[in-house]
Image (cartoon, rainbow, N blue to C red; front, top):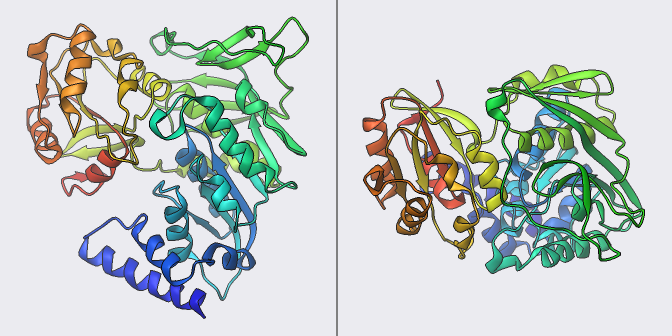
Length: 434
């Protein structure tokens, strides 16, 4: 009885929050539901046919969003935590609001925080787990990469029959242990415009299980590429392999002779798309390429909005590797607003700002506005990136910063926020789709 009552309660609260605009409701409902029905996730199992989780450091929201879009476009019913709230309360939140207990849902596509995957699997069954990548992220929560990897492996170990879709190009991801492993990877990358091609100077050295440093035949970004060791260890052969061509406004993935055009920029998004397409191919979904043109990116993941009529690209940043890939896409003609918070969901430790290559924007022509709780830290980082102090404007209040740049910008605007800043920007009424 508590389960059904919690479903009714969740839908009532969701409607109230939507009407009043008090909260975006990404996790508060989940907290209430768990008070009413502590075993809520366990009860959900019988109402969903196939259960999919997506985890990893970067790309969870975009990958799960693409999978959801393809499945919906193919006529399947799906529940998904679309707003990216991926801890336990966020997952319960999404399921309680969306689940229909009178009709069995075809799929759940749930992005899961790396540290919470094991807790989710304590009650929630799983058929497929997609792992995107493992980068250094939120060191205050995870510590180093070995900790993040261990947390995910603990979740995998709870579901021995789980089918794993792993990024073959990431040596950490490819090394996860499981009975059913399926690999995807990129064979080569081509650039339609040479300005899109750039090499990161921030790289980490990863070791083979034998202890020697891995070597690379091809390296795409961070540790991702075609790696090997003289001992014979090497990148596993992918079942789903892509040739990628990057354009300024979109990308094309060629997989098994079929071209998939995705309305996303950057190599990091090509990896996300490859993960999503590989999963859907594994599920037997057909005509995937026809579904992709209508895909709308999640808010803040390379999404284009209009701020007081000015084209505004919004891209979440939260760790060095992800920020570096985003910074590669920033036009030097754009008006840039960087918003850095250090709330729990952002990560309290902002030392990652010094590992990200903000030197990439020191040729920007316009004033750079910094905002958020750690606006001063961001301003200092830009100063050390050789950006003149007179070109840096600090407006700590996010509302005021957005208002300022909307009025002062003469060209397109780029907003780079951390997660909780992104949620705040999302609620601003002067930011619209065209």
